[in-house]
Image 1: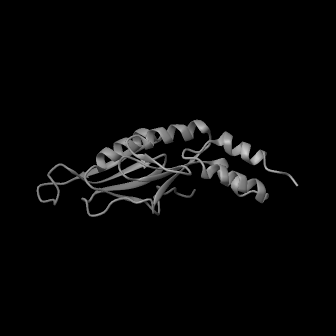
Image 2 (image 1 turned 90 degrees about the vertical axis):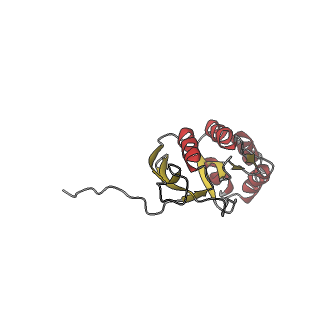
Image 3 (image 1 turned 120 degrees about the vertical axis):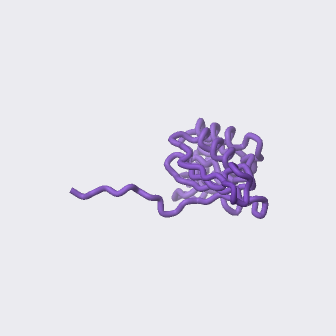
Amino acid sequence: MKEEKNYQQKITPFLWFNDNAEEAMNFYTSVFQNSSIKFISRYGDAGPGPKGAVMTGSFILDGQEFMALNGGPAYTFTPAISLFVNCDTQQEVDYFWEKLSEGGSTNRCGWLQDRFGVSWQIIPTILGELLHGQRADKSGRVMQAMLQMEKIDIATLQRAFDEAVTV
């Protein structure tokens, strides 16, 4: 019988926070199911940070591991990197949109920035199906509808798809 090895994720996103990595990890693990903090490493007497402050941490969001670092103000988050959340239902879209945008800001086409500055895309799975279909007229109408939205509305996307002119 083949011995099973513990799975180790090959690529782990590493997030640089100024001084609120622990707050961010606690927030994110409260938003996503099947989430937990794996470990927190704190500065000791000789560390560059205040004794007891978080240096690094590892946390799991719905099975995906992330690392966090309190690295100071040298770097900040930009929308050049975002975390993409696939949602099966409008209820999921609404939930993640509300939770993650609280204290942050929203933008068009399902993008938001949370209160820590991390960019997220809250996207229903059906959007990809509607945009990448065989019918350019239907996909075009879906794209036009999406471009008018901040939070993505599945019913509006579906109506735009269904109302496309059939040839």
